[in-house]
Length: 388
Image (cartoon, rainbow, N blue to C red; front, side, top):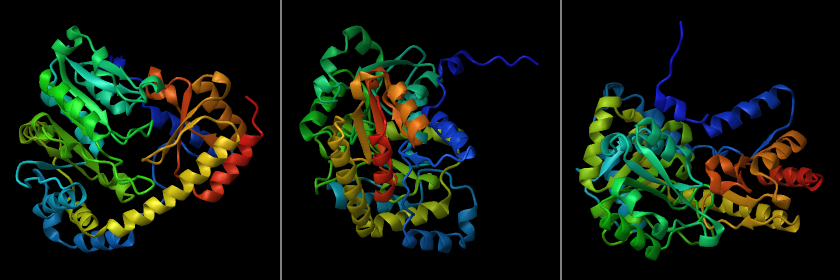
C-alpha cells in the first residue's frame, strides 16, 4: 500500500521537542550522563495536597462518565476566584471560562473556528511551535512577527503590511514569553488590543507562565487591560503553575463569543477533561498560593546561579524576569544547531536550538532551568572545558 499524506501534513516540520527527546534517549541508551535543559518540563513534583485531592476525587462514580461541556462548576468557580484574587479580573463562570485538555489543545483548535483556507494567523517568532503548526494543519497561512533584540524581543505591528492585515484573522501573543522570557507591560498590551480592534483580529494570549516570575514582580494578565475582552481570550495552564504537565488541564477565559466558537469545535473533537482532574485542579487553584511561592523561590535560586555562572564564562544571556527559560546568544556567532550539537555531543547537555522556534531565533539557544543547583554546577563545569 502507498501512503499519501495530505498537503497540510507535508507542511509540518518534525515537532521540535519530540526530536530533542528522541536524541536524548539515544544517548541515555549509550550510557551518557545527560543533563537536560531542553524540554520545559518541571522536575519538581506535583504538590501532595493536589495528589490527595485527586485520590479522593477518583472515588466519585459520577466522575467516570463523559465530562462534556465547559467544565465542572467547581472548576469554573475556582478559575473565577483565582482570576479575581490574582489579577483583579472579573469573569463569568457561565460563558467566559472553558476547561481545556492542556492549553496546547485549546490553542491548536482555535484556528478551526476562525480561520478559512488561505487566511492568515499572526504568530510571534521565535515562538511556541504550536501557533504555526496548528494554523498549517487547519489550512491557514502564517505570517511571522519577528521578536528581535533590536526591538527588545517584542513584535513590531507597524511592519505588518496592509495586504497581510486584510487576510489576518487571529494573532497570538505570549507573555511571559517562551523562549525569550520577555514580559509585556500594560502599555504594550494596550497597543496590541488597539491593533487587534482596528483590524478586526481575534487576539489569543498565551499566559502559561504568569506564575513563574522573579524578584517579586508578578506579570499582568492581558485581561487586566481595558478593551481586552472585546477582542480576545487568554489561555492559562496548570502545567507549570502547579507542576502538573502530565495532567493535561488548562482553561481559556475572556470574550464569550470567541470562547463559544472554540467550545463548538471542542464538542466535535473531544469529550472534555476528566472530572476528577478538574476537581483536583480546582483545589489547587483555591489552595496553592504557598506552593507557588515555594516553586518561585527554587527557580529564583536556579536562575541567579545559572545566569551568574554563564556571565562569568562570557556568555551573553537575556536575564529572565519570568519563566524558567534562559535565552542565550551562541558563542562566537556559531549557529544555533552547531552550538546545541556541541553541547550535546561533547558535554552531554541538552538544550533547545533557537532556530527551532523560528528564523529569528538563529544565533540563540534556550536553557530550561528544570535541573537542580547541583546539576547546574555540573553542567557549568562541563561547559568550561568546551571550546567553540
